[in-house]
Length: 311
Image 1 (tube, rainbow, N blue to C red):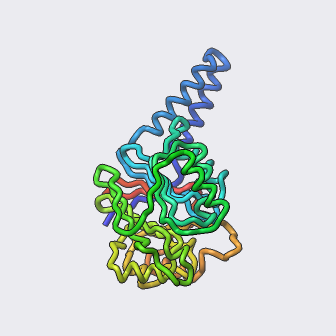
Image 2 (cartoon, rainbow, N blue to C red):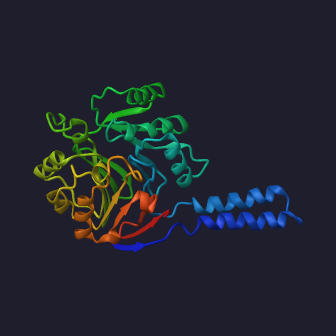
């Protein structure tokens, strides 16, 4: 079990603003403008230096999913891009230094707009090295646009399925737990139920990213005896009642849950019953929701876990 520490919003970034103010005041008397720029750049460089920790951010992008993984050796991995090019651009701008225009891997868990739309912006603005997706057939202009960009930019493109492992170094690993090959068929929603489920682990700390899977996919994973146990559960389908069955939650046995969802969305998510189930098992203070907490960042050295959020 990881030691968990709760933090308020970042205590470092305000120092950049303070340094800028000090330099600006001094510049009125005797400091030239280049020194102001140098002061800010030095602080930004310090903030973005590697800290030998794994950072996982559930980005506040509205009614959709977007997750940024930053490894100790400076790999940047994005899982889904949310429904808005503006929102994903803003959130990545907060987390990545302005000179870093490379994304090592983009994982699209499923092709619907609330997952893929923001990734179009990512492909346009960043040099993406590799793309992984479940290969679900889906007739959508947005999804086709994204696929065309992947092809036009000649990005490595791989179909993800259960059994694959992605080694990120330093004993950090992503396991693809779902979908199976061949894909599930004749479920209540084949798009949702074939979404990619990923388990990210480092020593004592692990994350389970569940896309939009429903209970049929949950039951399939349980039946397959998939390695579901995780410290942090990214709750499926924005807290919809179609997911997070008691049996699945018992299999995951998380210490913390995070829900990515839009504020005052027309679907009424997260569902009150899901919140009740999570709160009863974890406690109210261990359930994080993006409209309430903003972007939720988990920081770990593999043994300890720190949590900070924007709001």
